[in-house]
Every structure is written in C-alpha cells, then in structure tokens.
Length: 163
Ligand SMILES: Cc1cc2nc3c(=O)[nH]c(=O)nc-3n(C[C@H](O)[C@H](O)[C@H](O)COP(=O)(O)OP(=O)(O)OC[C@H]3O[C@@H](n4cnc5c(N)ncnc54)[C@H](O)[C@@H]3O)c2cc1C
Image (cartoon, rainbow, N blue to C red; front, side):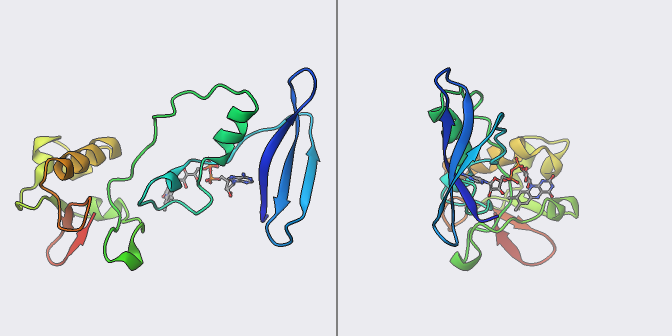
C-alpha cells in the first residue's frame, strides 16, 4: 500500500528483473528484485479532463512497460462511461450509475430531443456503453449539448442532471 513504482529494471539480456519504487508516506525508495513482473496498474482515465477514475489512474504501468521495451497495442480502446456529473464543479467526475438508464432515465439534447432514437432506436438508452457514449459525443460536437461544456441531459419524471 502507498507504494509507487517508478521504473522497471532489466538485466544485461534485457529481461525485467525488478522495479524501483518509493513509499508515499516516507518518501523512501524500495528496490524490488523479482524473477517475473506482472503489470496490473489499471487504465488512464486521469489523462482526461473529466473522469471518475481514482487519481492513481494515470497510465503509469503502460509507461513503465513501454520504457522497458514492451510493445503497447490497442491503446485507443478506452471505454467511456456514458453518464457522469459535469456540473456543478464540486461533483464533476462523479459517475452516474448505469442504473438510472435501466430505471427509465432518458437522454435529451438542448432541443429536447430524445436523441438515442437516432443512434439505436431499438435499445435506446439501454444500448451499449460505447454506442451511448458516442451518441453523447456526437450531440455535443454538433452543437446540441447542454450549456455546461461537453454534456447533454439525463432526465426522468422530474429534475435533470448533466451527463
Ligand atoms: C467509478 C467507477 C465505477 C465502476 N463500477 C464498476 C462496476 O460496477 N462493475 C464493474 O465490473 N466495473 C466497474 N468499474 C470498472 C472497474 O473498477 C475496473 O475495470 C477495474 O477496477 C480494473 O481493474 P484493474 O485491476 O485493471 O485496475 P485497477 O483496479 O485500477 O488497479 C490498478 C492498481 O494499480 C495501482 N497502480 C497504478 N500505478 C501504479 C504504480 N506506478 N505503482 C504502484 N501501483 C500502481 C493503482 O493504485 C491501483 O491500485 C468501475 C470503475 C469506476 C472508475
């Protein structure tokens, strides 16, 4: 816990044999020696302006592996969650659970149009995350977003939330 790896070590044959880390509480360095190293450092949502990811989700692991000579593939395959808070600033980045769409929440653009009809008329708001996220993005980039930057609306019987 509270330990950050900053570098992987390789031997003369180019094999990864350990890592350098520091403990965040004390700032002390640790040298790990290992026969094998498994990277499990999560994604890189923190590279985006609005994210629900923890502050540690910076893609460190991908960079560590890349610096050690690994080939990175499918880097563009980031999954975007379609609904989250963008306004007010205090809640920016909080996830709005998929459950709101499951329970009947509908997505609307600035013209009041339920735009999922144009993207997946069969499944509507219950379409897959990638389809709904792309629909949101299209609505925003084509100028039909909510006044708060980069968002549309999710609404139910009363009240609205920027998503
Ligand atoms: C708000 C939110 C809600 C979610 N809800 C669901 C859900 O309901 N159901 C579901 O299935 N999935 C959900 N997910 C997705 C799920 O959490 C992730 O897919 C999953 O946690 C990824 O696991 P992982 O082990 O790859 O990475 P992570 O769980 O991100 O673990 C990576 C770990 O690596 C550590 N790390 C990173 N860099 C370093 C470093 N340099 N040195 C040392 N340690 C490092 C991090 O601190 C972290 O502990 C949700 C995600 C979010 C953000």
